[in-house]
Image (cartoon, rainbow, N blue to C red; front, side):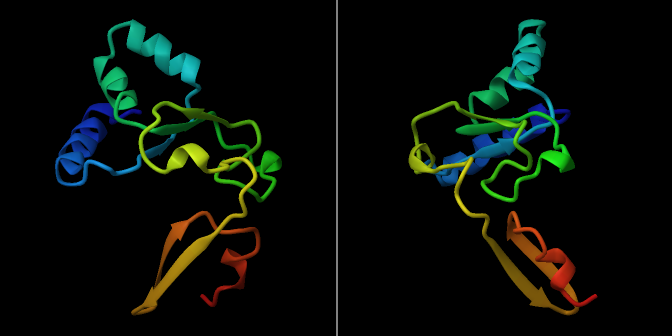
Length: 124
């Protein structure tokens, strides 16, 4: 949210090419804090929230990471902000974590949130 204007611009431009794009945004801020900032005139936050389909809010707390769902920790809250896209039926709190790992030139590229233990099992 510190770069809300730039991210809102990016999503708007990408949606011109891919209007059905699903957008999930993770933030350490709570929804109430974001709405408060928007009410105080931070229009970029309001603009970005208008582009986001699902917002997962709240700080990540390692001790509350239960290893399931797309939330990093159980204190985080999933807010479904729109009804567009395929995300309405997805269970963000209980679905098993999945990750795709691309390996090349001694580097790893991750897509998704790895289940516990995956990162430690990779060769360095």
